[in-house]
Figure (cartoon, rainbow, N blue to C red):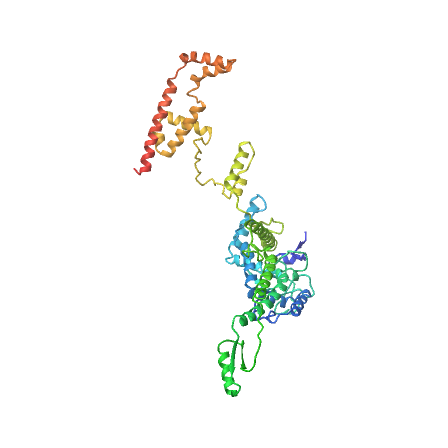
Length: 529
């Protein structure tokens, strides 16, 4: 049966025998250099960068997206919220099957992943695909002949990936700086953010935010210039008509030292009219435009605005609407978890299992625990009702559902304590009643055990035990044979003389003595005696 990689390419048989232990995407000092495409960004320049990416050259687009997150605090905070929502979750590796082999494989994969101390950092790097559309990690293999383990992952910068003459990513190396190389089988893990259909180069959220980022840049630049001038009074120096050039220069120097640029000198015989901008409307237009751009980018990243801004898009947000918006963000988190878990299982766990146990071995399930917390008490009541009506539930299912491990044979069992005076089971109640009846003092050495015994004895008295059967037998026969309630009441008094209450009285005396003794022991225990 042929094998295929994550891009649908068939893998040659020789490539599935041993993992590739080479290090291909080696980072160099040059990788820190950047062309800083956001400097002097214009609509024409932004359009050209996007066109280059559409043709497969994503270098400038990657550098631009990196700068956008660095320069815009709003963008940085929104992506941080979405990434940390996944990074902060616990995960689990569960066997795909109930046999011992599947469990052994799952334990091995869990051990390898938990052995990576920087696993949380890798999760954050994988989620870089949200912004740029894709993220790639090189798998660093250790092959010692017996086991093939993953000793680590190395994040590959998005600008070191190219789509030159290819619809699938190619890795740029020192030997192939332009066209790159095809990723070898099971050597790279490639996570794609598929929020919509289309090519990987156009899939990133920052591609959507690019124009809002550009307009906000223009707006902020004009806003700062406006604030610099509008916030300072216009300083005017007046000089006599016969002032010398030196006096004029000294005057303008003194004025400029009071502030920057908003200064000038005129003659007293000259009149200038200064037209001020409207104080209302034009002052807030810059902030309004900036808020609008932020709101649009929040919609693109989080799907809503009320969880990122207290008042949404400038209006007053209600609590109910905010909860709805938070549910929208929750849907995105679940989708991110599901997509990333699929990448980890298919591109990390699958080769790890294949190289060690064979390619037909069951690959464990990987998932993030992103479900909302359940009311375990309510859930336990549901299972208890199902069990009471005879529904067959396995211990393994209950253990998995409540995350409570099943007791091993070598472990000490937990004693069952009844709730509300009810016995743990009828057998235990009968046993406790007999113990109390024979020797109540010996069985009340522990006050807690004494309470259990007393409760068991009370229930046994109410239910009618073996000690009461001879006395109650005539009553049972009377009720069975009687044709009416009046007949029972008429004959019941006549039965009293034929009944033997001595055993019942003896049992009540012992129970009363046991209760008094238990009360004394319990009081001493609470008093610390």
